[in-house]
Image (cartoon, rainbow, N blue to C red; front, side):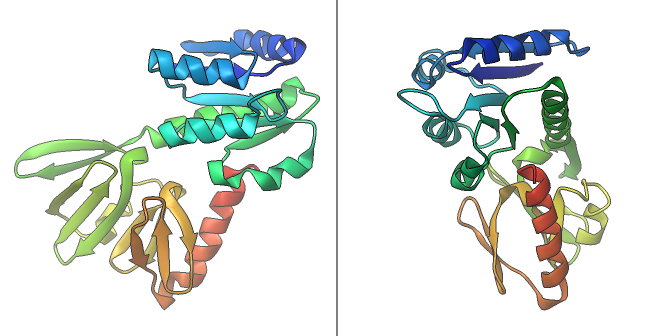
Amino acid sequence: MITIAICDDDKLTANYMEEYILSLPIKDIFYDIFMTGHDLMNYLENNNVRYNIYILDIEMPGINGIETASHIRRKDKNALIIFSTDHKEYVYQVFEVLPFRFIIKPLTKERLTTVLYEAFEHIQTMGQLFFFKKERNNFQIPFRDILYFEGNGRKVRLNTVTGEHEFYSRLRDITGKVDANLFLQIHISYLVNMEHIHSISESEVLLDNHIRLPISKKFRQDAKMQHLKYMEWRCGH
C-alpha cells in the first residue's frame, strides 16, 4: 500500500488533489488531507504514523511547509517530500530536507501525473531486495536500507542503517545484483547507495550518517557526474 499525506491550506487545491488521486488506476492508495502543518505534525506525533509521500504547500499560515518538512525528515529519512508552491525561488531554499520534487502552481493533471508516477517508481526501486547467503542462512535487505558495500578479497561487508553483514562474494559480482541507477562505485573496494550520499569531494564521499569513504582518482570524475545526474533527477531538475 502507498500512503500519501496532503497538507495545503487551500481547500480547492486539496480537493483537486484528492479527486486526482481517486481517479488513479492504482489499487491500495491511502491518503489523508490536512489543512495546516500543525495538524499534520500533531497527527504524526499522536498516532505514530508515517506516510510514503507528503505533498506540502510551502506557504501556509503558522507552521509553513518547509518547517513541516524538517519535522518529518527528523523522524523519517525515507519519506518522499513533494512541495507545491507558487514561487520557483523556494526551490533553492529547501535542499536540507531533500525534497523529491516540486509542483509549481497552478496544479494541473499533467504535472501531478508526472510527479506521482515518478514517486511510485522510486518507492518501488527502493523497496527492491538484495539477497545474500551468510553461514548457510539466506538474507534479504531492501535497497533503501543499504548504505554501502565494502569489498575485501573474497569477502564483502554490507553496511546498512541497522548494522553490518559480512559474507563471501566479490564486489564486482555485487554490481550486477543491484540497480545501477542507484548504486555508485567510488573505489575498487566501495559501492555506495546514492540515496545516502551527502556530498562528494576530491578525496572522499560523506554519507548522511557522517561516515566518510575514500574516493579514488580512477572513479572520481564518473562518480561525480553520475551523482549529479542522480541529484538532478532526485530533485526534479
